[in-house]
Amino acid sequence: MKLGFIGTGTITTAVIEGLIKSKAKVQQFNISQRSKKNSSYLKRKSGKVTVYSKNQEIIDRSFIVFISLLPKQVKQELQKLQFKKGQIIVSFVSTLNIKSTKKLCTPATTIIKAAPLPMAVDGLSPTIIYPNHKVIKSLFEKIGTVVVAQNENQNNHFWVMSSFMATYASIVQTLKKYLLKNKVKHEDANKYLNTFLTGMLFELNHKKFDLDKCIKSLQTKGGINEELLKRLTKDKFFTKLQNNLNKIYLRLKKANDK
Ligand SMILES: NC(=O)c1ccc[n+]([C@@H]2O[C@H](COP(=O)([O-])OP(=O)(O)OC[C@H]3O[C@@H](n4cnc5c(N)ncnc54)[C@H](OP(=O)(O)O)[C@@H]3O)[C@@H](O)[C@H]2O)c1
Image 1: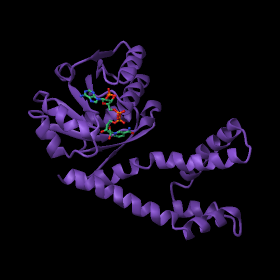
Image 2: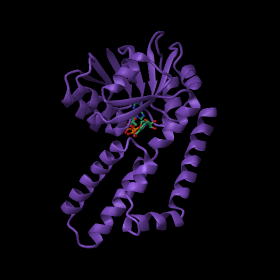
Image 3: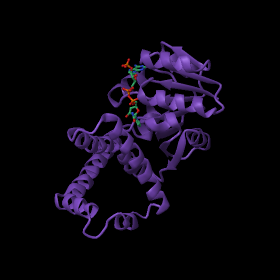
């Protein structure tokens, strides 16, 4: 299988590094020079990586082409390129719907949208794909799990989840800042939070993600877990999060309806 990537940014780098580690049956990774730091890094990682300065060369040499440009760059760049009939196109671009991608990549007709996440580098990306495609699904399963959206609208809803990454890290940062402010050493704060977060995930898994059960069992009556949850609920922390997730969905829907 010869894979080509237009755009060697954060997500392409994580996906390729994850695939290299997973020993997936890939003959070639044809990648663009941009960004140079990432393409040089990947070239050093595997002899299967070839770097090209022209995107057309990548398309000409690849059976599956991954589009990994930013939304503002993608239309202009794709218009300049000539795709092949029978080629599989996988787009990582959240704001471009299947119909528009098909138009831009004509005569290729197999278009898949996919949202791998940076955790792909450790084989832990929950990748959303739409529509389903056997080869693409099994490829992403090498670097995590795959969730197949049932339609484009559901695809947008799953993409909303991927918008939570930086907020998640910011919540963890708030906990860490609290410890640092109170004279706890960096290493001890990291050590505590690392096992805390990993342990919490195991706890949720033990309860089979029955979150009502988890929330109940994690609170002692009159205890500090109960108090913090009550305080944040009263401050509308969760309502605000929910409302803002809806706003992200509306942004994705508006862009995809075009
Ligand atoms: N990051 C994520 O977690 C994530 C998850 C799912 C989907 N996505 C989507 O995946 C896409 C890429 O995201 P990213 O986070 O990887 O962004 P990124 O790190 O900014 O990568 C974009 C890359 O495209 C390169 N580029 C720009 N114009 C180019 C051109 N004409 N030809 C070749 N390369 C070009 C840029 O190189 P220069 O630096 O040289 O300009 C940069 O390396 C976006 O549409 C994003 O929404 C990202």
